[in-house]
Length: 265
Image (cartoon, rainbow, N blue to C red; front, side, top):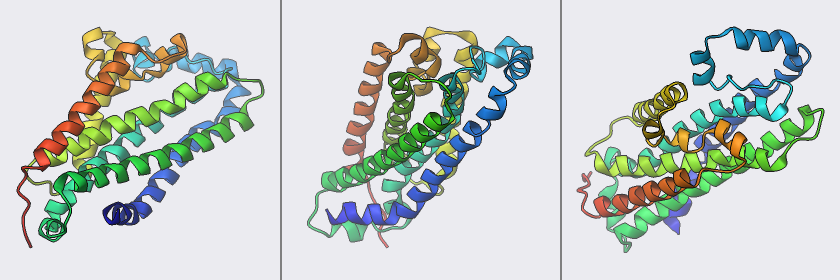
């Protein structure tokens, strides 16, 4: 429990910054909605003038500016991208810090097993992800409610917003695996951003190519907001694949960390 408290204490400033950043990104887009809604035809023509490949890649092909949830779907995509970087960053840094800062020997002289150390660190990451999602969900609900002139589908709004939770858990678990798989990680952010952007580029390609196999690679396609809007639910196959991959990443994290050599001071 002391490990959990220490991890949460160490990460609280970063967590606050990320929460404010995600809400800021969402606010930046959503506060444009009243101006756009007052000039619907002009803005709709601007979006339709883009090449169809561009529209598909950036999620504006089916954008209905008259609908608050359609515009929220467009804005949320960028929150998902930033949230994925946050989660990947937490996953990579929470364990690799013991290697970078050479604190492993201090930690393991304590009467605590390696599995318990990993469990507490994973729990700390999960708690921070839940806090992040609670903040984003609350801020999103307030903004959509205040900016909407008509009633909107709360269930669809919830499905959209909960996509952040699933995507963050995926990238956090992937980050944990990467942190124990690589022998030494000097800097965390370049790795986190690199991995997330590779998956995002694959998602953009799939938006254009519509390749089912390509769609199984990127977690952004598992929770494709356009598909969620059409089906009013998550895809069962993608959800199953998400569970399997997260489970595999967590299992390998425990397995590899139990045999990992940590440098001493």
